[in-house]
Image (cartoon, rainbow, N blue to C red; front, side):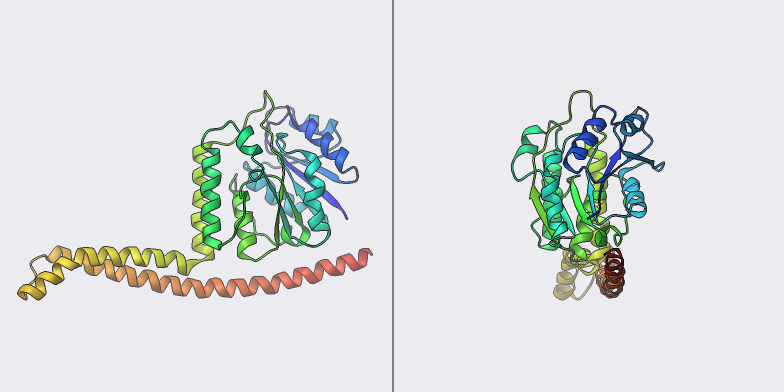
Length: 315
């Protein structure tokens, strides 16, 4: 099985050499790719010195790097890991095994279950953000993923070549998790250790701005993947608001036969109309989303056939 280790990097000269050496030790036959995302330090030079295949991605953002990686690299199994030396390479065999056995399309390195992330991570609000995102997605899809935003994952070729990467930045992990759940790919989680960055290495994450981008991504994909549920929420809000505003108007009319609260009656009518329109939009978009899922399944079947043909030729 051809394995490719994918390492997106931005200013990781302190740690990239050790990360490459660790994965070369664990996977001596794997191809190790370092994608330099406009680093201003010696990341590329050090990666070359340690034997990695170095490529450049000039569009800033981890999502743009992942998009190029998935498009350009051909392998049977893909392992993606951050270049900050926070994920131990010795767990890579456990991540690859379900891919090798065709038990999963994506294997997630779970940092949270064994408590090492809580112990090692020193950045404020990150644990809160992880829990919030995990609760939102698990509630949305009735799933039980323990670590949505981990940067240590393994994929098979089918998943890599069939996901439309739309996120430009750090929201990419959330997008991949949502895509896998919505398209019913096989997922498996492996508990791994986590260690904080070594001294001299700085995180590129901004807790609040990147956290807002992740929440915006969930909001957007919720609207696209489950439009009926999304617009039904707005329907309920508009109708409840319309009833709250219109109840005094109706009471006055039945009591006196007159309406003196004209602005309230107009507002209540408008809110009820918005509620109905929102529900109709949800129905229409849900039909479109359902058709898109069917088309995606057909295209996925074609992709599976192509991969099987390539494997037979290789054998």
